[in-house]
Image (tube, rainbow, N blue to C red; front, side):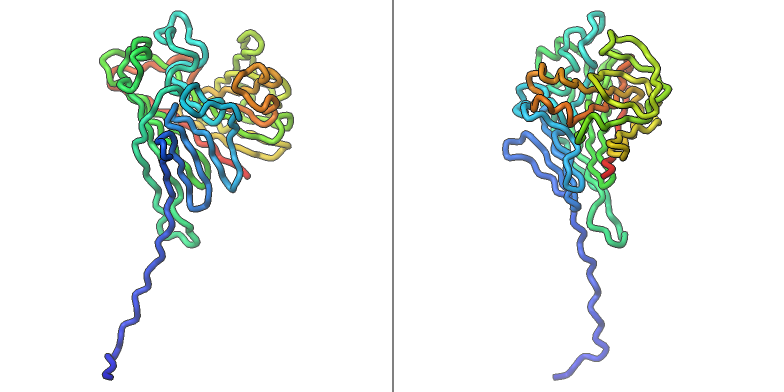
Length: 318
């Protein structure tokens, strides 16, 4: 057999790095994204509510065992999205006919698709670094009753980005009508902890806050590391660039970075959780702390054609 001289060696083929996996449930009610590392996030289309975020095999969010996941009621736990009003609507506001915390968390959102980052040629790369899931809600998606209660033309795009370094949530609000409107927005994050009595929150010192437990009185925060030792419901005014850290037993557990959201709400119902119908277990307050990025101390005005964007990134410091 004649052998061909100078046979070229085979061209090495680089292995294809694994990509994030995105699954849609059979009943089209939720989206789950999983990174090659195993980190994952799960979002209900009802309210575009994040109900699970796992990193390094550990769940980072608190979800009530009695939470309604069938679209019959706003979800207790995870990260509900508050828009266009925070809390009970003021009687003199255009939001006055809306339910508490508005309609975003109780509306059916559309899944708009995904995009992933490129891992490139980094050594020891195990796949793409992140996956971004986009969800949409517009005035045309609202029920006739809600549309009548808040008759403005708008478009929302909510982006959830799962990365190796944390979970990002960003809301883009666009005024698609000819009339200006005002709104509030909040990312109602329920963070899971082991023992609320060992929790401290830093980054709030020397800021002003409204204490809802004490008749909405105004105060200045004196703690460099705020302990949680009783029922807490406060709205802090904090520079949007100031980092917030949640520590447990002196060890940093979560780091929160905000973009264009100058309020931080800190909430734990303490033993009052027993009076909340969909809060379970009754002593679950020991294992959660809400640290919520938002713009709620005033109103954001959006003129026709204008947009607003605000968000947060939560890092799990395991």
